[in-house]
Length: 202
Image (cartoon, rainbow, N blue to C red):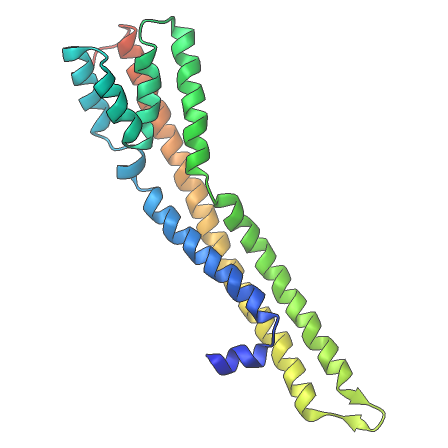
């Protein structure tokens, strides 16, 4: 592996850096976008039961705020239970926007890496081409420099595309997961608001 990195020249280090960042983001997002962390199915029924038996208590609000992300939305609705429907709706939407930002954290960076890694591969290719042309002299070519230039050009193109493809795939995957989670949270939040307003039974 070290021999390949040496053959790829100094431009490869930029691609390696982006690949490390991409791997870190992918691992973090897989961990953070789990349903159990964002919107567990049992939280809404448990919240409704406690609300119906004890009402809105500070302990309930604190536990919701410190628990899964959807709990923040539930807490916003419960904290305004006696307010008009529009006030509850605004509170839920404000909290939902904050949760959305948390869900989308680092995704723009991952999308940027998918684009930049390809450009870095192209950059390395250009550096390699410059070395190839630099190996040609009036007295003849330098085979060692020519071979190194070809290695730099090809390896950087390969590594750049190799980083870009999985980055794009995981970016799309996480965007879709976020969309699914948002729809699920909206559905649960609407149900909670309707129960608070007496428009629906649990």
